[in-house]
Length: 161
Ligand SMILES: [Zn+2]
Ligand SMILES: [Zn+2]
Image 1 (tube, helix red, strand yellow):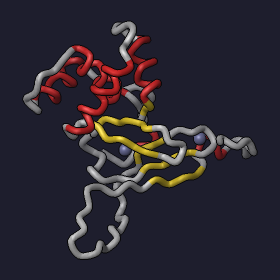
Image 2 (cartoon, rainbow, N blue to C red):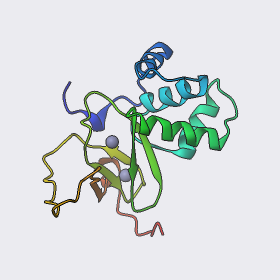
Image 3 (tube, rainbow, N blue to C red):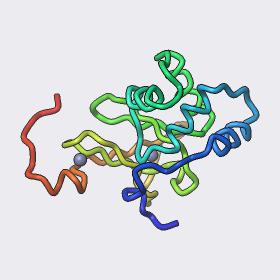
Image 4 (cartoon, rainbow, N blue to C red):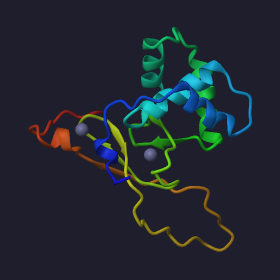
């Protein structure tokens, strides 16, 4: 698989079975909502915010979703290593399913023009040397910039804050 992460098709059909199997592999209780949330992340072309996941779920067969249940399920996926969370300086958490081709630690790109976030292929970002007795849990690298689509349009001067 080439590093075509930024150009993956807009939707990748993921079967319920595939989502269910990966959840089962963890050996924990799985619910219909959990499968639906995970499937939504697997099918997404890029990390999705909580409201975006909710919109997609509600547009599908699932119907109205309780915000809190959705949040718990997203957290559960992160805790069990099936998804990762991206934090950007707009203070919006976005969630993305872990795919085989994306390394556990990988940088993200945040477009300051359209606000979208993309997973980047792993690159050799040096881990800073830590003081004695400090241990790293994770390191997040977010590159702020302008994505290819926005770069083709004249720059917008609007502030997003
Ligand atoms: Zn953009
Ligand atoms: Zn990512």
